[in-house]
Length: 489
Ligand code: NAD
Ligand code: 6OD
Image (cartoon, rainbow, N blue to C red; front, side):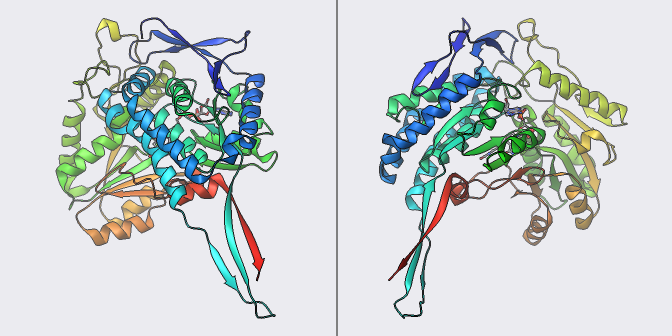
Protein backbone atom coordinates (compact mmCIF):
# COMPACT_ATOMS: atom_id res chain seq x y z
CA UNK A 1 0.00 0.00 0.00
CA UNK A 2 1.68 3.26 -1.03
CA UNK A 3 -0.60 5.95 0.47
CA UNK A 4 -2.32 5.15 3.78
CA UNK A 5 -5.98 4.58 3.03
CA UNK A 6 -8.90 5.61 5.23
CA UNK A 7 -10.84 2.64 6.57
CA UNK A 8 -14.48 3.24 7.44
CA UNK A 9 -17.17 1.18 9.11
CA UNK A 10 -19.56 -0.92 7.01
CA UNK A 11 -23.10 -0.24 8.17
CA UNK A 12 -26.30 -1.11 6.32
CA UNK A 13 -24.37 -1.89 3.14
CA UNK A 14 -22.44 1.42 3.10
CA UNK A 15 -18.86 2.34 3.94
CA UNK A 16 -19.37 5.16 6.38
CA UNK A 17 -18.01 7.15 9.31
CA UNK A 18 -19.56 10.01 11.23
CA UNK A 19 -18.29 13.44 10.05
CA UNK A 20 -16.61 14.06 13.43
CA UNK A 21 -15.04 10.58 13.59
CA UNK A 22 -11.56 10.26 15.06
CA UNK A 23 -9.08 8.15 13.10
CA UNK A 24 -6.26 6.06 14.52
CA UNK A 25 -3.18 4.81 12.66
CA UNK A 26 -2.63 1.23 11.66
CA UNK A 27 1.10 0.51 11.38
CA UNK A 28 2.76 -2.23 9.36
CA UNK A 29 4.25 -4.89 11.66
CA UNK A 30 6.92 -5.40 9.01
CA UNK A 31 8.49 -1.93 8.95
CA UNK A 32 6.45 0.29 11.27
CA UNK A 33 5.09 2.54 8.50
CA UNK A 34 1.50 3.83 8.71
CA UNK A 35 -0.58 1.82 6.23
CA UNK A 36 -4.10 3.01 7.08
CA UNK A 37 -6.13 5.48 9.13
CA UNK A 38 -9.01 3.68 10.82
CA UNK A 39 -12.26 5.35 11.91
CA UNK A 40 -12.90 4.76 15.61
CA UNK A 41 -16.51 3.79 16.18
CA UNK A 42 -18.46 5.33 19.02
CA UNK A 43 -21.81 4.63 20.64
CA UNK A 44 -23.71 6.21 17.72
CA UNK A 45 -22.00 3.94 15.16
CA UNK A 46 -22.75 0.84 17.22
CA UNK A 47 -26.32 2.02 17.58
CA UNK A 48 -26.66 2.50 13.80
CA UNK A 49 -25.13 -0.89 13.09
CA UNK A 50 -27.36 -2.71 15.59
CA UNK A 51 -30.45 -0.93 14.20
CA UNK A 52 -29.48 -1.93 10.65
CA UNK A 53 -28.90 -5.51 11.75
CA UNK A 54 -32.25 -5.66 13.55
CA UNK A 55 -34.22 -4.22 10.69
CA UNK A 56 -32.52 -6.66 8.25
CA UNK A 57 -33.88 -9.51 10.36
CA UNK A 58 -37.40 -8.27 9.67
CA UNK A 59 -36.74 -7.51 5.99
CA UNK A 60 -35.81 -9.52 2.93
CA UNK A 61 -33.12 -11.56 4.79
CA UNK A 62 -35.56 -12.80 7.40
CA UNK A 63 -37.95 -13.99 4.69
CA UNK A 64 -35.46 -16.08 2.71
CA UNK A 65 -35.81 -19.85 2.72
CA UNK A 66 -32.85 -21.87 4.00
CA UNK A 67 -32.01 -22.86 0.41
CA UNK A 68 -31.96 -19.23 -0.73
CA UNK A 69 -29.72 -18.25 2.18
CA UNK A 70 -27.44 -21.20 1.49
CA UNK A 71 -27.08 -20.16 -2.16
CA UNK A 72 -26.10 -16.64 -1.10
CA UNK A 73 -23.46 -18.03 1.27
CA UNK A 74 -22.02 -20.24 -1.47
CA UNK A 75 -21.86 -17.00 -3.46
CA UNK A 76 -19.86 -15.34 -0.66
CA UNK A 77 -17.42 -18.28 -0.56
CA UNK A 78 -16.98 -18.12 -4.35
CA UNK A 79 -16.45 -14.36 -4.34
CA UNK A 80 -13.79 -14.66 -1.62
CA UNK A 81 -12.07 -17.21 -3.82
CA UNK A 82 -12.37 -14.93 -6.86
CA UNK A 83 -10.81 -12.07 -4.86
CA UNK A 84 -8.29 -14.38 -3.20
CA UNK A 85 -5.27 -12.19 -4.01
CA UNK A 86 -6.94 -9.08 -2.52
CA UNK A 87 -7.64 -10.94 0.72
CA UNK A 88 -4.09 -12.33 0.84
CA UNK A 89 -2.65 -8.83 0.30
CA UNK A 90 -4.91 -7.24 2.94
CA UNK A 91 -4.12 -9.90 5.55
CA UNK A 92 -0.39 -9.70 4.80
CA UNK A 93 -0.49 -5.90 5.20
CA UNK A 94 -2.31 -6.17 8.54
CA UNK A 95 -0.35 -9.04 10.10
CA UNK A 96 2.99 -9.13 8.24
CA UNK A 97 2.74 -12.94 8.06
CA UNK A 98 4.25 -14.76 5.06
CA UNK A 99 2.28 -15.16 1.85
CA UNK A 100 2.35 -18.96 1.98
CA UNK A 101 0.59 -18.96 5.37
CA UNK A 102 -2.12 -16.66 4.02
CA UNK A 103 -2.49 -18.61 0.78
CA UNK A 104 -2.49 -22.11 2.22
CA UNK A 105 -3.93 -21.72 5.72
CA UNK A 106 -5.80 -18.54 6.60
CA UNK A 107 -7.56 -17.15 3.52
CA UNK A 108 -8.88 -20.50 2.17
CA UNK A 109 -10.45 -21.04 5.60
CA UNK A 110 -12.41 -17.78 5.15
CA UNK A 111 -14.15 -19.23 2.08
CA UNK A 112 -14.55 -22.64 3.76
CA UNK A 113 -16.21 -21.05 6.81
CA UNK A 114 -19.10 -19.90 4.59
CA UNK A 115 -19.33 -23.02 2.44
CA UNK A 116 -19.15 -25.58 5.26
CA UNK A 117 -21.80 -23.90 7.43
CA UNK A 118 -24.06 -23.47 4.41
CA UNK A 119 -23.74 -27.26 3.95
CA UNK A 120 -24.35 -27.92 7.64
CA UNK A 121 -27.57 -25.88 7.83
CA UNK A 122 -28.81 -27.43 4.60
CA UNK A 123 -28.28 -30.98 5.79
CA UNK A 124 -29.06 -30.86 9.50
CA UNK A 125 -31.96 -33.10 10.51
CA UNK A 126 -34.70 -32.00 12.89
CA UNK A 127 -35.29 -33.94 16.12
CA UNK A 128 -38.72 -35.53 16.42
CA UNK A 129 -40.47 -37.78 18.96
CA UNK A 130 -43.80 -39.60 18.78
CA UNK A 131 -45.39 -39.85 22.22
CA UNK A 132 -48.26 -41.85 23.66
CA UNK A 133 -51.33 -40.05 25.06
CA UNK A 134 -54.20 -41.38 27.24
CA UNK A 135 -56.68 -41.21 24.34
CA UNK A 136 -54.42 -43.51 22.34
CA UNK A 137 -54.07 -41.05 19.48
CA UNK A 138 -50.63 -39.81 20.46
CA UNK A 139 -48.74 -36.64 19.77
CA UNK A 140 -45.80 -35.63 17.64
CA UNK A 141 -43.00 -33.40 18.92
CA UNK A 142 -40.51 -31.79 16.63
CA UNK A 143 -37.82 -29.18 17.09
CA UNK A 144 -37.39 -26.09 14.97
CA UNK A 145 -34.39 -23.80 14.88
CA UNK A 146 -34.91 -20.06 14.72
CA UNK A 147 -32.11 -17.51 14.38
CA UNK A 148 -31.10 -15.96 17.67
CA UNK A 149 -31.23 -12.43 16.23
CA UNK A 150 -28.45 -9.86 16.15
CA UNK A 151 -25.08 -11.45 16.98
CA UNK A 152 -22.18 -9.33 18.25
CA UNK A 153 -18.91 -10.72 16.87
CA UNK A 154 -15.65 -9.64 18.52
CA UNK A 155 -12.50 -11.01 16.98
CA UNK A 156 -8.72 -10.87 17.59
CA UNK A 157 -5.72 -10.02 15.40
CA UNK A 158 -3.78 -13.23 15.15
CA UNK A 159 -5.73 -14.93 12.34
CA UNK A 160 -8.20 -12.13 11.62
CA UNK A 161 -10.07 -13.41 8.59
CA UNK A 162 -10.19 -17.06 9.65
CA UNK A 163 -11.44 -16.25 13.14
CA UNK A 164 -13.96 -13.59 12.12
CA UNK A 165 -15.55 -15.71 9.37
CA UNK A 166 -15.53 -18.75 11.68
CA UNK A 167 -18.25 -16.83 13.52
CA UNK A 168 -19.91 -14.85 10.72
CA UNK A 169 -20.29 -17.97 8.48
CA UNK A 170 -22.43 -20.03 10.88
CA UNK A 171 -24.23 -16.95 12.26
CA UNK A 172 -25.49 -16.03 8.76
CA UNK A 173 -26.14 -19.65 7.78
CA UNK A 174 -28.55 -19.82 10.72
CA UNK A 175 -30.36 -16.67 9.55
CA UNK A 176 -28.94 -14.18 12.06
CA UNK A 177 -27.49 -10.78 11.28
CA UNK A 178 -24.13 -9.62 12.66
CA UNK A 179 -22.29 -6.59 13.93
CA UNK A 180 -18.55 -7.31 13.82
CA UNK A 181 -15.91 -5.46 15.84
CA UNK A 182 -12.61 -6.66 14.36
CA UNK A 183 -9.37 -6.14 16.24
CA UNK A 184 -8.05 -2.58 16.03
CA UNK A 185 -4.81 -4.14 14.77
CA UNK A 186 -6.37 -5.92 11.78
CA UNK A 187 -9.44 -4.28 10.22
CA UNK A 188 -8.67 -4.81 6.52
CA UNK A 189 -10.17 -8.20 5.65
CA UNK A 190 -13.38 -7.50 7.60
CA UNK A 191 -13.72 -4.34 5.51
CA UNK A 192 -13.05 -6.18 2.26
CA UNK A 193 -15.71 -8.70 3.19
CA UNK A 194 -18.21 -5.81 3.12
CA UNK A 195 -17.44 -5.36 -0.59
CA UNK A 196 -17.98 -9.08 -1.13
CA UNK A 197 -21.35 -8.97 0.64
CA UNK A 198 -22.52 -6.15 -1.63
CA UNK A 199 -21.27 -7.86 -4.80
CA UNK A 200 -23.05 -11.08 -3.93
CA UNK A 201 -26.29 -9.31 -3.03
CA UNK A 202 -26.45 -10.06 0.69
CA UNK A 203 -29.23 -7.72 1.84
CA UNK A 204 -28.16 -4.48 3.51
CA UNK A 205 -27.74 -4.64 7.27
CA UNK A 206 -27.04 -8.38 7.43
CA UNK A 207 -23.27 -7.90 7.79
CA UNK A 208 -22.03 -4.78 9.59
CA UNK A 209 -18.57 -3.80 10.76
CA UNK A 210 -17.70 -1.13 13.32
CA UNK A 211 -14.00 -0.47 13.89
CA UNK A 212 -12.41 0.65 17.11
CA UNK A 213 -10.84 -0.51 20.33
CA UNK A 214 -12.14 -2.63 23.24
CA UNK A 215 -12.69 -0.89 26.59
CA UNK A 216 -14.65 2.40 26.41
CA UNK A 217 -14.77 2.04 22.64
CA UNK A 218 -16.66 0.11 19.96
CA UNK A 219 -15.98 -3.32 21.53
CA UNK A 220 -17.41 -2.47 24.93
CA UNK A 221 -20.35 -0.50 23.42
CA UNK A 222 -21.25 -3.50 21.27
CA UNK A 223 -21.28 -5.89 24.22
CA UNK A 224 -23.35 -3.44 26.30
CA UNK A 225 -25.92 -2.72 23.58
CA UNK A 226 -29.35 -4.09 24.56
CA UNK A 227 -30.18 -4.76 20.90
CA UNK A 228 -27.49 -7.46 20.68
CA UNK A 229 -28.98 -10.90 21.38
CA UNK A 230 -25.80 -12.95 21.80
CA UNK A 231 -22.05 -12.39 21.74
CA UNK A 232 -19.38 -14.56 20.23
CA UNK A 233 -15.85 -13.62 21.18
CA UNK A 234 -12.32 -14.85 20.51
CA UNK A 235 -9.50 -13.29 22.46
CA UNK A 236 -7.83 -13.13 25.84
CA UNK A 237 -9.38 -14.76 28.87
CA UNK A 238 -9.43 -11.51 30.88
CA UNK A 239 -11.28 -9.74 28.02
CA UNK A 240 -13.77 -12.62 28.08
CA UNK A 241 -14.37 -11.93 31.77
CA UNK A 242 -15.22 -8.26 31.01
CA UNK A 243 -17.52 -9.27 28.15
CA UNK A 244 -19.28 -11.87 30.28
CA UNK A 245 -20.10 -9.19 32.84
CA UNK A 246 -21.58 -6.99 30.09
CA UNK A 247 -23.56 -9.93 28.68
CA UNK A 248 -25.06 -10.72 32.09
CA UNK A 249 -27.22 -7.60 31.64
CA UNK A 250 -30.18 -8.88 29.63
CA UNK A 251 -29.13 -12.55 30.04
CA UNK A 252 -27.39 -12.65 26.65
CA UNK A 253 -25.76 -15.91 25.61
CA UNK A 254 -21.98 -16.03 25.02
CA UNK A 255 -19.59 -18.26 23.13
CA UNK A 256 -15.94 -17.74 24.09
CA UNK A 257 -12.73 -19.00 22.49
CA UNK A 258 -9.98 -17.82 24.84
CA UNK A 259 -6.32 -18.19 25.68
CA UNK A 260 -4.18 -21.30 25.92
CA UNK A 261 -0.87 -22.58 27.30
CA UNK A 262 -0.80 -25.75 25.31
CA UNK A 263 1.37 -28.78 25.92
CA UNK A 264 3.10 -30.80 23.22
CA UNK A 265 3.86 -34.36 24.35
CA UNK A 266 6.58 -36.26 22.50
CA UNK A 267 7.07 -39.94 23.35
CA UNK A 268 10.33 -41.74 22.57
CA UNK A 269 8.47 -44.07 20.17
CA UNK A 270 7.36 -41.21 17.91
CA UNK A 271 8.30 -40.73 14.28
CA UNK A 272 11.17 -38.43 15.27
CA UNK A 273 11.34 -36.21 12.17
CA UNK A 274 7.56 -35.81 11.99
CA UNK A 275 7.48 -34.86 15.69
CA UNK A 276 10.22 -32.25 15.29
CA UNK A 277 8.41 -30.78 12.25
CA UNK A 278 5.05 -30.84 14.05
CA UNK A 279 6.33 -29.18 17.22
CA UNK A 280 8.22 -26.63 15.13
CA UNK A 281 4.99 -25.70 13.29
CA UNK A 282 2.88 -25.68 16.44
CA UNK A 283 5.29 -23.42 18.32
CA UNK A 284 6.43 -21.06 15.58
CA UNK A 285 3.76 -20.80 12.83
CA UNK A 286 2.44 -17.25 12.61
CA UNK A 287 5.38 -16.23 14.84
CA UNK A 288 3.81 -18.22 17.66
CA UNK A 289 0.64 -16.13 17.64
CA UNK A 290 -1.79 -19.05 17.46
CA UNK A 291 -4.04 -19.84 20.39
CA UNK A 292 -3.59 -23.57 19.67
CA UNK A 293 0.19 -23.21 19.60
CA UNK A 294 2.58 -25.14 21.81
CA UNK A 295 4.51 -23.17 24.43
CA UNK A 296 5.22 -26.15 26.73
CA UNK A 297 6.97 -29.15 25.19
CA UNK A 298 7.46 -32.38 27.14
CA UNK A 299 9.84 -34.89 25.58
CA UNK A 300 10.47 -38.43 26.89
CA UNK A 301 13.96 -38.57 28.38
CA UNK A 302 15.70 -41.04 25.98
CA UNK A 303 15.22 -38.63 23.03
CA UNK A 304 15.30 -35.33 24.94
CA UNK A 305 18.80 -34.08 24.01
CA UNK A 306 18.44 -35.15 20.37
CA UNK A 307 15.04 -33.49 20.12
CA UNK A 308 16.27 -30.18 21.55
CA UNK A 309 19.20 -30.16 19.07
CA UNK A 310 16.91 -30.91 16.10
CA UNK A 311 14.34 -28.25 17.02
CA UNK A 312 17.12 -25.70 17.59
CA UNK A 313 18.49 -26.38 14.09
CA UNK A 314 15.06 -25.82 12.51
CA UNK A 315 14.46 -22.63 14.48
CA UNK A 316 17.82 -21.21 13.51
CA UNK A 317 17.02 -21.78 9.83
CA UNK A 318 13.93 -19.50 9.71
CA UNK A 319 14.04 -16.82 7.03
CA UNK A 320 12.98 -13.34 8.19
CA UNK A 321 11.75 -10.73 5.74
CA UNK A 322 8.91 -9.16 3.83
CA UNK A 323 5.86 -11.44 3.63
CA UNK A 324 5.38 -10.89 -0.13
CA UNK A 325 8.69 -12.65 -0.80
CA UNK A 326 7.80 -16.33 -0.89
CA UNK A 327 11.35 -17.25 0.18
CA UNK A 328 10.59 -15.88 3.68
CA UNK A 329 8.81 -18.15 6.14
CA UNK A 330 8.89 -16.10 9.35
CA UNK A 331 7.12 -12.81 10.04
CA UNK A 332 7.11 -10.15 12.77
CA UNK A 333 4.86 -9.94 15.82
CA UNK A 334 1.67 -7.94 15.35
CA UNK A 335 2.84 -4.70 17.04
CA UNK A 336 5.56 -3.02 19.06
CA UNK A 337 3.32 -3.27 22.10
CA UNK A 338 3.03 -7.04 21.73
CA UNK A 339 6.78 -7.26 21.11
CA UNK A 340 7.40 -5.47 24.42
CA UNK A 341 5.24 -8.06 26.16
CA UNK A 342 7.03 -11.01 24.50
CA UNK A 343 10.47 -9.52 25.19
CA UNK A 344 9.53 -9.00 28.84
CA UNK A 345 8.93 -12.78 29.05
CA UNK A 346 12.26 -13.42 27.30
CA UNK A 347 13.92 -11.41 30.09
CA UNK A 348 11.89 -13.09 32.81
CA UNK A 349 12.88 -16.58 31.55
CA UNK A 350 16.57 -15.77 31.97
CA UNK A 351 15.95 -14.16 35.36
CA UNK A 352 14.11 -17.31 36.45
CA UNK A 353 17.15 -19.42 35.57
CA UNK A 354 16.34 -20.79 32.10
CA UNK A 355 19.00 -22.27 29.86
CA UNK A 356 18.68 -20.36 26.61
CA UNK A 357 18.92 -22.87 23.77
CA UNK A 358 18.48 -20.30 21.03
CA UNK A 359 17.07 -16.81 20.39
CA UNK A 360 16.02 -14.64 23.29
CA UNK A 361 16.19 -11.23 21.66
CA UNK A 362 15.66 -9.08 18.60
CA UNK A 363 17.27 -10.08 15.28
CA UNK A 364 19.48 -7.77 13.25
CA UNK A 365 17.25 -6.59 10.44
CA UNK A 366 18.11 -4.50 7.37
CA UNK A 367 17.52 -0.76 7.86
CA UNK A 368 14.20 -0.72 5.92
CA UNK A 369 12.71 -3.34 8.28
CA UNK A 370 14.22 -2.03 11.52
CA UNK A 371 10.94 -0.32 12.46
CA UNK A 372 9.09 -3.66 12.38
CA UNK A 373 8.20 -5.72 15.45
CA UNK A 374 10.67 -8.57 14.88
CA UNK A 375 11.77 -11.00 17.57
CA UNK A 376 13.89 -14.12 17.47
CA UNK A 377 12.19 -17.49 17.84
CA UNK A 378 13.30 -18.78 21.21
CA UNK A 379 13.74 -22.09 23.04
CA UNK A 380 14.47 -22.59 26.74
CA UNK A 381 15.13 -25.62 28.92
CA UNK A 382 15.80 -26.09 32.62
CA UNK A 383 12.91 -24.16 34.21
CA UNK A 384 10.67 -25.43 37.00
CA UNK A 385 6.95 -25.72 36.24
CA UNK A 386 6.33 -22.74 38.53
CA UNK A 387 8.20 -20.32 36.21
CA UNK A 388 6.07 -17.59 34.64
CA UNK A 389 7.07 -18.54 31.07
CA UNK A 390 5.93 -22.12 31.73
CA UNK A 391 2.61 -21.12 33.29
CA UNK A 392 1.41 -17.98 31.47
CA UNK A 393 0.33 -17.53 27.86
CA UNK A 394 3.03 -15.51 26.06
CA UNK A 395 1.53 -15.71 22.55
CA UNK A 396 4.95 -15.45 20.95
CA UNK A 397 7.47 -17.63 19.07
CA UNK A 398 8.87 -19.50 22.04
CA UNK A 399 8.68 -22.72 23.97
CA UNK A 400 10.14 -24.38 27.04
CA UNK A 401 11.21 -28.03 26.67
CA UNK A 402 11.32 -30.40 29.64
CA UNK A 403 12.10 -34.12 29.87
CA UNK A 404 9.64 -36.64 31.36
CA UNK A 405 9.88 -40.30 32.39
CA UNK A 406 6.35 -41.76 32.37
CA UNK A 407 2.89 -41.42 30.88
CA UNK A 408 1.33 -40.57 34.26
CA UNK A 409 3.94 -37.91 34.93
CA UNK A 410 3.48 -36.17 31.59
CA UNK A 411 -0.32 -36.17 31.87
CA UNK A 412 -0.02 -34.53 35.27
CA UNK A 413 2.40 -31.93 33.90
CA UNK A 414 0.18 -31.20 30.88
CA UNK A 415 -2.92 -30.77 33.06
CA UNK A 416 -1.24 -28.60 35.68
CA UNK A 417 -2.36 -25.32 34.11
CA UNK A 418 -5.38 -23.04 34.32
CA UNK A 419 -5.90 -23.22 30.55
CA UNK A 420 -7.21 -26.24 28.62
CA UNK A 421 -7.35 -25.51 24.91
CA UNK A 422 -5.29 -27.98 22.87
CA UNK A 423 -2.64 -30.70 23.01
CA UNK A 424 -0.51 -32.39 20.40
CA UNK A 425 0.71 -35.93 21.14
CA UNK A 426 3.48 -37.65 19.19
CA UNK A 427 3.68 -41.46 19.42
CA UNK A 428 3.50 -44.51 17.15
CA UNK A 429 1.66 -46.44 19.90
CA UNK A 430 -2.03 -45.96 19.16
CA UNK A 431 -3.23 -47.43 22.47
CA UNK A 432 -1.09 -44.94 24.32
CA UNK A 433 -2.41 -42.11 22.14
CA UNK A 434 -6.01 -43.04 23.06
CA UNK A 435 -5.16 -43.34 26.77
CA UNK A 436 -3.43 -39.97 26.92
CA UNK A 437 -6.05 -38.21 24.78
CA UNK A 438 -8.76 -39.32 27.21
CA UNK A 439 -6.93 -37.88 30.20
CA UNK A 440 -5.64 -34.50 28.97
CA UNK A 441 -8.01 -31.74 30.04
CA UNK A 442 -8.36 -29.85 26.76
CA UNK A 443 -10.97 -29.21 24.09
CA UNK A 444 -8.90 -30.38 21.12
CA UNK A 445 -6.25 -33.14 20.98
CA UNK A 446 -4.18 -33.84 17.90
CA UNK A 447 -2.25 -37.09 17.57
CA UNK A 448 0.74 -37.01 15.19
CA UNK A 449 -0.54 -33.74 13.74
CA UNK A 450 -1.43 -30.21 14.71
CA UNK A 451 -4.08 -27.73 13.49
CA UNK A 452 -5.58 -30.33 11.16
CA UNK A 453 -9.14 -29.03 11.00
CA UNK A 454 -12.40 -30.70 9.99
CA UNK A 455 -14.96 -27.93 10.48
CA UNK A 456 -17.72 -30.39 11.42
CA UNK A 457 -15.97 -31.28 14.69
CA UNK A 458 -16.53 -29.60 18.08
CA UNK A 459 -13.99 -26.85 18.70
CA UNK A 460 -13.42 -24.92 21.92
CA UNK A 461 -11.55 -24.81 25.19
CA UNK A 462 -11.85 -26.37 28.65
CA UNK A 463 -11.08 -24.63 31.95
CA UNK A 464 -10.13 -20.96 31.32
CA UNK A 465 -9.78 -21.49 27.57
CA UNK A 466 -13.40 -20.96 26.71
CA UNK A 467 -17.11 -21.47 27.07
CA UNK A 468 -19.09 -23.53 24.60
CA UNK A 469 -18.20 -25.36 21.43
CA UNK A 470 -18.43 -24.20 17.83
CA UNK A 471 -18.03 -26.26 14.65
CA UNK A 472 -20.58 -28.29 12.66
CA UNK A 473 -23.87 -28.72 14.48
CA UNK A 474 -22.28 -27.36 17.67
CA UNK A 475 -22.27 -23.93 16.05
CA UNK A 476 -25.98 -24.30 15.36
CA UNK A 477 -26.55 -24.84 19.08
CA UNK A 478 -25.18 -21.37 19.73
CA UNK A 479 -26.47 -19.46 16.70
CA UNK A 480 -30.07 -20.73 16.88
CA UNK A 481 -32.82 -20.85 19.41
CA UNK A 482 -34.15 -24.42 19.39
CA UNK A 483 -37.87 -24.64 20.05
CA UNK A 484 -40.20 -27.57 20.47
CA UNK A 485 -43.56 -27.91 18.71
CA UNK A 486 -45.93 -30.51 20.18
CA UNK A 487 -48.91 -31.55 17.99
CA UNK A 488 -51.69 -33.56 19.53
CA UNK A 489 -52.81 -36.02 16.87
P1 NAD B 1 -7.94 -9.31 23.10
O1 NAD B 1 -8.80 -9.99 24.10
O2 NAD B 1 -7.02 -8.26 23.57
O3 NAD B 1 -8.82 -8.62 21.97
C1 NAD B 1 -9.74 -9.36 21.20
C2 NAD B 1 -10.84 -8.43 20.74
O4 NAD B 1 -11.57 -7.98 21.86
C3 NAD B 1 -10.34 -7.19 20.02
O5 NAD B 1 -11.22 -6.92 18.95
C4 NAD B 1 -10.44 -6.12 21.09
O6 NAD B 1 -10.59 -4.82 20.59
C5 NAD B 1 -11.68 -6.56 21.83
N1 NAD B 1 -11.79 -6.10 23.22
C6 NAD B 1 -10.79 -5.87 24.09
N2 NAD B 1 -11.30 -5.48 25.29
C7 NAD B 1 -12.65 -5.47 25.15
C8 NAD B 1 -13.72 -5.16 26.03
N3 NAD B 1 -13.53 -4.80 27.30
N4 NAD B 1 -14.99 -5.27 25.56
C9 NAD B 1 -15.21 -5.65 24.29
N5 NAD B 1 -14.23 -5.95 23.40
C10 NAD B 1 -12.96 -5.87 23.83
O7 NAD B 1 -7.16 -10.47 22.34
P2 NAD B 1 -6.06 -10.32 21.20
O8 NAD B 1 -4.82 -9.79 21.86
O9 NAD B 1 -6.64 -9.59 20.05
O10 NAD B 1 -5.84 -11.84 20.75
C11 NAD B 1 -4.95 -12.70 21.37
C12 NAD B 1 -5.67 -13.59 22.37
O11 NAD B 1 -6.71 -14.30 21.72
C13 NAD B 1 -4.78 -14.65 22.97
O12 NAD B 1 -5.06 -14.79 24.33
C14 NAD B 1 -5.20 -15.92 22.24
O13 NAD B 1 -4.96 -17.12 22.90
C15 NAD B 1 -6.66 -15.68 22.05
N6 NAD B 1 -7.19 -16.49 20.95
C16 NAD B 1 -7.96 -17.58 21.25
C17 NAD B 1 -8.45 -18.40 20.22
C18 NAD B 1 -9.27 -19.63 20.49
O14 NAD B 1 -9.81 -20.19 19.54
N7 NAD B 1 -9.38 -20.08 21.73
C19 NAD B 1 -8.15 -18.07 18.90
C20 NAD B 1 -7.35 -16.96 18.65
C21 NAD B 1 -6.88 -16.16 19.67
O1 6OD C 1 -9.54 -23.42 13.20
C1 6OD C 1 -10.39 -22.79 13.84
O2 6OD C 1 -11.61 -22.91 13.65
C2 6OD C 1 -9.95 -21.86 14.88
N1 6OD C 1 -10.91 -21.26 15.59
C3 6OD C 1 -8.63 -21.64 15.03
C4 6OD C 1 -8.07 -20.83 16.01
C5 6OD C 1 -6.80 -20.39 15.88
C6 6OD C 1 -6.22 -19.60 16.91
O3 6OD C 1 -5.29 -18.86 16.76
